[in-house]
Image 1 (cartoon, rainbow, N blue to C red):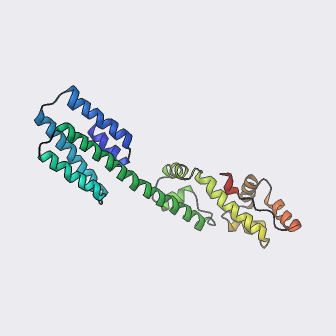
Image 2 (tube, rainbow, N blue to C red):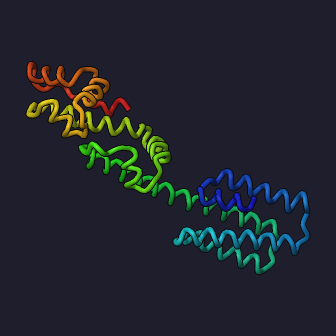
Image 3 (cartoon, rainbow, N blue to C red):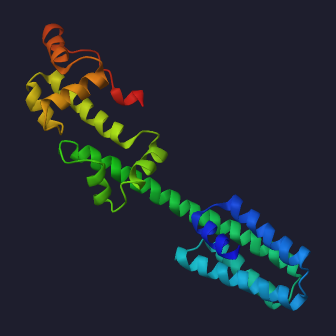
Length: 227
């Protein structure tokens, strides 16, 4: 249970951490009714685990640091083990929140980095799930899961929509032919580009281009809003 708590704290899972802490309390304070010297040894072990976890954070909230100092002072003063355990439990919850906030911040940074990378490289026909995963040194399995979780949009759908939005803008400008536009937005094949354009916009790129030529600029329809 203690090893599992360590992993849960580092994952920032406060509810499950506290549930397991309560199991430890029930086992050692209620069911086994450990004698006082063993209870104090048990609490020192838990406090040692807290120190190791805090060291992983490198920088801990000063309030949490003060609470940890207070914990060891209470233990050295041989305070009531139940009260000390409650202090230990409180610190586990605080470290969970610290780890969660660090993880959340890192996830936000990674999400925006991936989005910026897509927008800067969409014209590269080799840009793909595999190449983006390799660039950010994450696995091809993790990337789509992470991206969907953080944005609510599938990675492949987002990349395709970025390319199609750029294609729509180029068609509205009317300066390039279909093959040139396909290459500008990351497609080696005009046929592949054409299928993607029709799937996203509901009309072929050729028909869209002809409509622009016949009637001028069309009202803006942003495919990204469909997600």
